[in-house]
Length: 352
Image 1 (spheres, rainbow, N blue to C red):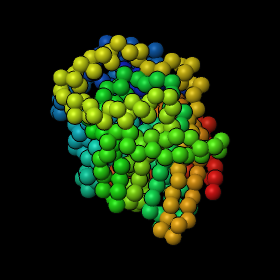
Image 2: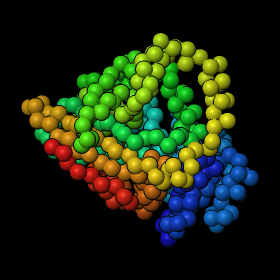
Image 3: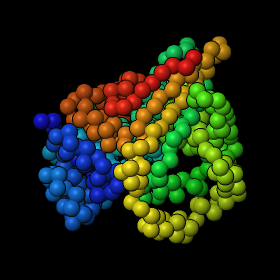
Image 4: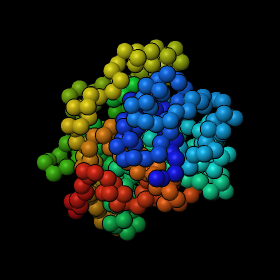
């Protein structure tokens, strides 16, 4: 039996998927969150213990973690929830992992590297679909050239819908615009302002730059100073993104944020089992070197919501059993670029 892992946020869409996967794998997991009745409904059929604790109750949170070796933090938006959990993990010597894709959260946790090393713990944000496959692919492709200077990642096949938690996070990001990295520095651009064509093997397709987590993490994993991430989008979505740049300041309004988040509650909790399990995702990494050489590698994975429970629990298991370095890490720096290939139904091939 592995040391205990606490899953915080177990009553949300992704949290329930993680709990089911943990039960299937026979892991020693404790489910935690804010609502005792909702926790009971998730935990009892799976035979798990529960802990009810609020993130702003620091003494109780620290006491909850005393018997825990690793926390898998699932409750977003992580811009609001990551810091108190990281604080508690540093105080109790508990490894911290989450499934964020929020650029500013990655950067904030990276700044706590020295604290984590002194405490002897791992800080690993992005242990799910954001950003395990793309981070591992970036590290693999970067290693194929000398002195890489530019990285572009394109992601296709991300349909099937989003969970309410993801929708809330997306709403928070509407006022931020596009994020890219130039000369090692995070920079903002207007929404829909960068386009590029990518060939996944069936001819060029249109990609629109988006503010994905690798703009933060791939820099720490590879040292590449110029990073952009694109989604392959079709129909009227690119036009809507371009049009939205004029409304970006409006999306920063607290009143509009509250209104949009209130509408999220009318959404389905997340993609259906059929949509989640039938979707395939393709990721393409292109790396250019100072001498002009280029490497391209393609990765195929299950959908984001199907991959996240598998990736996050395997990362949590390795952290709990002491198979990881300490300090701030990305998936690739913690487990290596081939970590993604150790997960079910993931294939990678080099294109050039």
